[in-house]
Each structure stands twice: as C-alpha cells, then as structure tokens.
Image 1 (cartoon, rainbow, N blue to C red):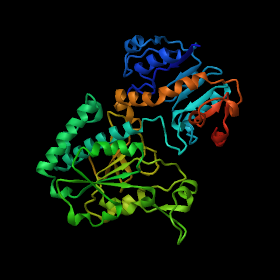
Image 2 (tube, one colour):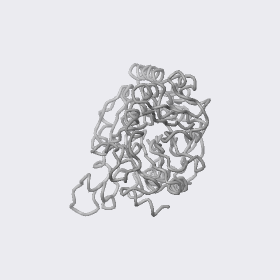
Image 3 (cartoon, helix red, strand yellow):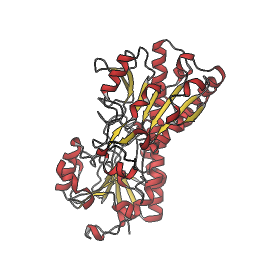
Length: 434
C-alpha cells in the first residue's frame, strides 16, 4: 500500500529554515515503507527542493492528496483541511491564547493533531525534539553577548571574538573557534575583575545539555551550588566554573519541616517557594533551561533584581540566556521575545525599562524563542533521525477506529491532542482555554 504524506513550507518568520524530515529519510520511507512525500516548494529550506526530488519526493504547492501533513511550527488556520491528520509543534498544551483559534479550527474541521512535544517514553522523556540545538545556539549567542557586554565595559577578553550563531558556517566551525578561545583563556587567563567567572544552568535536560556542550569546550570546572559562597578563595583565572541547578537546589517546601519531594513538586508546585535568588549574586552568566508554567514559582523576580542593583555598587551578573523564553515567566523581567539578528536587550531593574542591544545599566537578556533555527541543517537532521521511524506507524494506523482502539504506538498515542475533532482524554483541560 502507498501512503501520501505532505511537508508544509515553513513561513512563521524569515529565520525558519528547518524541516521535520530530511531527504535521506524521505528516500528511506519511500523505498522501505511505500510512503510518498509531497513538499511545498521553498527557497529558504535548509535542504533544497532538488535534494528532495533526488530522494524521490514530489514538489508541489497542493498537498490535498496527502492524508498526513508534517510541519515544524504552528500552522495558519486557513491551511487545514477537513478530517486530515497534522503533526507539528502546536504550542497549545498550556492553553496558549495566541494558538487557540488554530486549535478551534482543527476541532471544527474534525482534524487530528499529533504534537511532537508530547511524544515521550514511559518516564515522560521527550523522544522527538530540537532542545539540544536550542541549548547549543543559546549558549553561543550568550557568550557572544557576554563578550560584547564586557567590551562595552572596557574589559578586554577573548569572548569578544565570538560571533553569533547565524554568522558561522556550521556547528563544526563554531566548536573549532570556541576551542581556540578556550586555549587563549588557558594560556593568558581572564582579568581579575571577572574571577571567578561562574556560569549557572537552571535545569539539566536536553536544552541544558546542549548549552553545556558548548561551554565545556572551554576550560571548565564543575562545582556544586553549595560551593558558590566559598569559591572566591580558591578560584583560578584560567578556569570557568560551571554549576548546574536541579529542582531541589531551586525550591523548598513552604510547610515548616516538610522535605523536598520531586514528584510532589511536579504535582503540587503551589506547596513550594523559590530559594534560587540566593545564588544570583555569585553568577556571571545564568542560562535558563528549565520548563516553567504559571503554576511554578519564579526563579528571578523584578523585585529581587531591583534590590540587588540598589544594594550593590557592582553586580556580578552580566547576561541571562533565557533559552526557555517564557515571557514574564521564570525570569520575570523577560518581557519580549527577540529575533536572531537582534537577539538581546538590557533590562534596567531600577527603571524597569528595556533597551535593545547590550549597552546601558542593568542585565543583558537573550530571549530568542526560536533558537534551533539558527542551526537549521544540524537540528533538522537530528530531529528527522528521531521522527522518521514513527512515520510508518502514524500513517498506517486505522483512523476510523475509536481513539481507545486506534493502533498507534503508545509514545505517539500520548501525543494525540485532538482526534477527529475532539480533545482526547488527557487534554480535555484545554477546553477551558478555548
């Protein structure tokens, strides 16, 4: 049996060049499973139309012959067709207001929605993701911003040589260049005014691992959160200190005498309060790589930062790389998302004003909400490697069956947010946002 799938052209912004399936896997799907791929033409896609043609794909605007449409980012409401299955990052799980019209349209047309974000294993770990590449690009851009900030302050460091991710040829070139920066730090050291240079990571998942992968190219020594208050006396100017914060480092139970329990925190975050701000005065750079929604405590508040800048003449914290980029979220003063060509702004905690760029009083905030698109080829390849094995099961399932009986793999079934125009049992809560 031949199955037709479609790949939608990405057009959310001019930076989006990623694809859900690369030519190599399109070819394998056709040869091994009889899956024929149709793609909308694109002049900006990381892989060219000709590469897909050589892989056996058909390039055409009309995807109406495809029962399943794959994309990366959100899909416009006028694109949906009645009864079809769509697979993409819908960003609807938190009831995101700006995507409710899109979800409503899918319900009206009796569509099925499979969301990559919810393709997880039995432990809840994501199986199809771009997170590592958000971390990679976010760390590179944060180090660039750090170098620019120090240069504005009149402090000469090797970080000034780092470019933004989008101005490198590929990840290999980036890693080679950062390796050279690391050698310079080892040989010449950093200015005393920057020592100890401490980079903190909130979170330890795929995003954090990607960010750490870049930092670890430099001369890095890992320390524990409880060591931060004593590190000053034993620090070296040829070393960057890395600290990774887990949930138990960042929050504590509100109830006196209660003990931290991770599962309890996930289930009842209202029972916990943040203790993270105790670490902020020790950090030079903070990378926010942690999942957050409004049920959880904030980790850096406007009030705390205002107090810090009021009390201290020279604040150590220079840059926050908010890779998670929840607006007014875990980092309360992240007030807007930015673009790859203008990725940072300075937040002044005394006036609560923001100014694009890396100059002026306050903290530099990196807030690009689409970081993996800065490494489109590498991130698409990695994503496709994870996704393509699921495609035959997704397209081969019998969608005439009731949801309880559909023969999808459990990892995919968990990711079905809408089935034939109805929210599935795990996602009924979204009704209150529609």
